[in-house]
Image 1 (cartoon, rainbow, N blue to C red):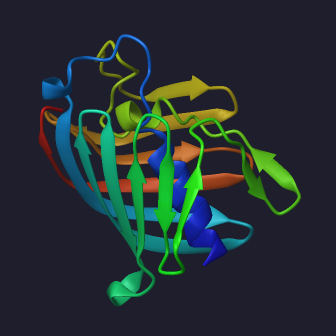
Image 2 (image 1 turned 180 degrees about the vertical axis):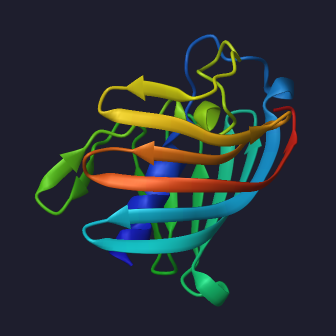
Length: 169
């Protein structure tokens, strides 16, 4: 369960507002995909559904065969995580504690990166992007955006396979 919580916090953080963001009408989109997470010698594959509407995000992660669902709700000020044990609130700039280490996550950029954009400017990137200790790679893409991406950090590795991406991407 802790593994799933860490993963959810990572993915929800990208929904937080940044400066110079396009108007909400340009930020309505939905993504479905598979997320592979490697952390602490374990790897898990999860189904992901991400719905973005302006400054609000709703992300659902589910384990294999519908096991272990977690829901994230993100607004400009709060990240709410519910794994079935009651909702927990996090601030958008909190470091994530992994065992005895803290992990600095790129909260404010993630919602752009998963769509193959560098940030609020909407500029697309192909290949590789580095941000702090993070390396983001587009492994495969089509005309709509990335199909397969890798998010690499010394502490955690994620692979995202986008199955569908619709809306104003």
